[in-house]
Length: 165
Image 1 (cartoon, one colour):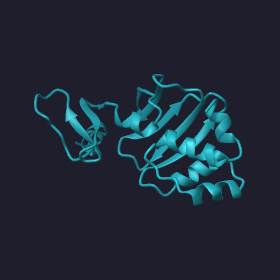
Image 2 (tube, rainbow, N blue to C red; image 1 turned 180 degrees about the vertical axis):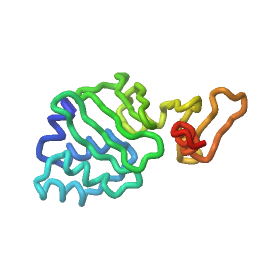
Image 3 (cartoon, rainbow, N blue to C red; image 1 turned 30 degrees about the vertical axis):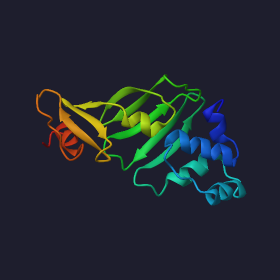
Image 4 (cartoon, one colour; image 1 turned 30 degrees about the horizontal axis):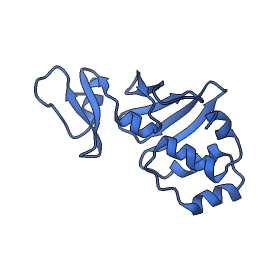
């Protein structure tokens, strides 16, 4: 994909919709019916991608900011609120991920937005949050403790960050 913003703003093709959805989450099983419908409806790739993720447990809303970056907003995610990616990002480049109330970190692009985020450590209030594939969720570890300090999810650190824990 030469320029992600140009692709998002162009009329949807089966290839462009599949490519962008795969950039966000390689594990998505995009159906031929959905791709054919997006082309038949004559929507942009951006509209088709937003339609695809609308019903997901973690919805992703994609928008563009001029020609500067593509803004991915996560709705329903325990930790991450948004990610901003260059329209010409390459593997190994860094992009910004925003999490908690006002935290930001650089994440290395590996070709799959969800996978890159899953492989990143987030720190909130002295707690490290990292995706645990065995439980298919983000878990917390106290970085100041010698024990594992894992909890059921990231809510503990988020409550501590909000002064409620």
